[in-house]
Image 1 (tube, rainbow, N blue to C red):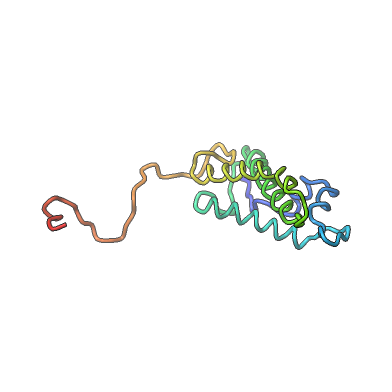
Image 2: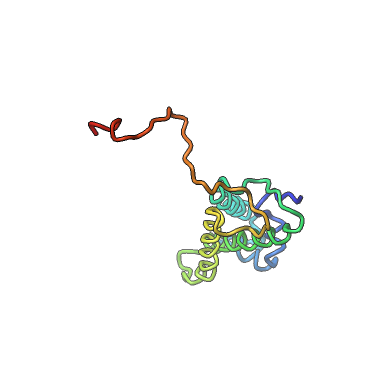
Length: 159
């Protein structure tokens, strides 16, 4: 079994975005310093991880245990969708009031597709790429700790 402990981290971001592009995305747009803004990067990473955790609530909790055969596919799926969200948030953070709005529109479609995918995974319609997904109840029973009451015509008189 392979354990996945986070959806997105700084190492994954650095491996998927060139240093020049990362600098353009994460430098101060008002006063460029030519240095990577690690505080902004870490904030965006936390926001993306929060997106995943809030969408997956009960279906996928960290750490994720994945079969070794599925690990590469699951990591690639998570990385692709996490990077789409990261790049959109980074582009959004860099826009100045005088910037053309189509700069972030380049990432908007990927961001929207990622959101739809995360919703589908949360509902069980799509998978993260694992051959075996976590068990799910197909019965749809409602569980209650209240006393049992049988509803019949006789007991419902007066309502």
